[in-house]
Image 1 (cartoon, rainbow, N blue to C red):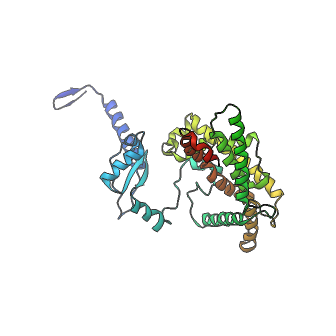
Image 2 (tube, rainbow, N blue to C red):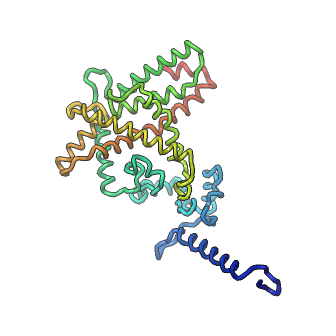
Image 3 (tube, rainbow, N blue to C red):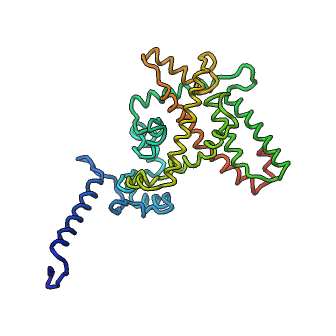
Length: 347
């Protein structure tokens, strides 16, 4: 038993030693996980955060409002922590333009997050923290493929390009489906139908006529795109609290399962498209990638592997797929309370 200021404290020397050891261990862990600022520099201003938790409790359920309040106090450039990961927060139009436009090379990278490693086995150009020469070369290849596809057209069609042809045909099919449903029950939710139609257009852009328009596998991937968007676009706890990766998480399991199904689907589509590839007949983005890959191999001396082509197709297909839920989400509520606008919207 010890006494402090004459007051007896019922604690043994062993218990005191154990408490001191635990305190030192926690202090060491906190200090180790805190980011080290290079000598001569200082961290951006920011509020005090809880050890291990950071500012998770401060952000709450409306992080945009909490960050707006913090920017009023600490300025347009501030730092918070989610878990032990430092996060730079930029506010204000001028500050964001300075970062993304004038200093674009400094801010073009991606954070090294765990959930990003689950997208195309960590080889995605979009979700890869690498922004060096290899990333730049793959980006140029994707841009060339998109440019080639954008000007390619079918001589037998009146459309100016394949994209216009795909959109017009799918719009006719969607309109016919709507008219069929209106002739039946007279009311319906257009969300799923619009999502599937947009997914078909994106699939036709990437794979041309070889894209399955009515397979269950395609429907499952397109309709479940929200699982990917919700996990990738919002702060996933497993990215900032590593211990959560080893605990049961239905959300994380669905995210992993979706990415594996998508990768297998795209791998099958790319392999089928490669068998039918004709460099003199470019009808889709995948064919354009094959063509420019062969052209680059003659100058750089190496043909881009089929696996890397799959990764590029996944980035392009996924970029359109991630935005698929937005149009029906925005258009449906606008038409619903104003039935007089429905005929005009269909036209």
